[in-house]
Image 1: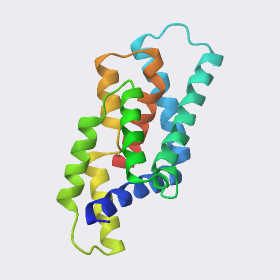
Image 2: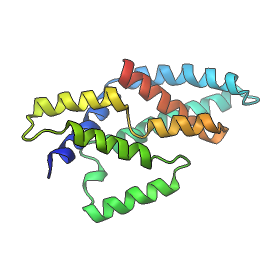
Image 3: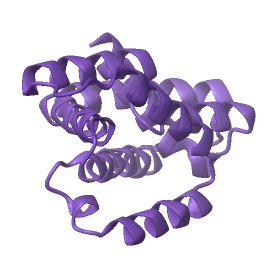
Length: 170
């Protein structure tokens, strides 16, 4: 495995650790951002039951994102061909296009990767990547939502915003 692939895995592992350690903070940010966005966009009649359903969906999306970044998760059990097919399918199924964002992430990873990185150095570079590029695919989700907001996109958007605030700002 080359250095860039190792660094990309370290990036995902660092994201996993950040999110896992900050689930309560994420829940607080999600509640705040969700309430603000409902009012800002005028998304109609949100009673307590509907709000709770959207908040719960957001928290489920956080769990889904954790599994995506999980270093011992399923993404590492597929061979390279299957993983490529899975990524292509995911890109087709999402309402946002994250291909350019992934290419930018890959470029940043290649630019930072060093020959024979120690575990400590790899972790430091992964943290730098997170500060510089954020958590993939948040930028794509946020920009697509802001270009055409819709109630069905709201949970993804809220989770992306909460994650970005957490991993970039703390």
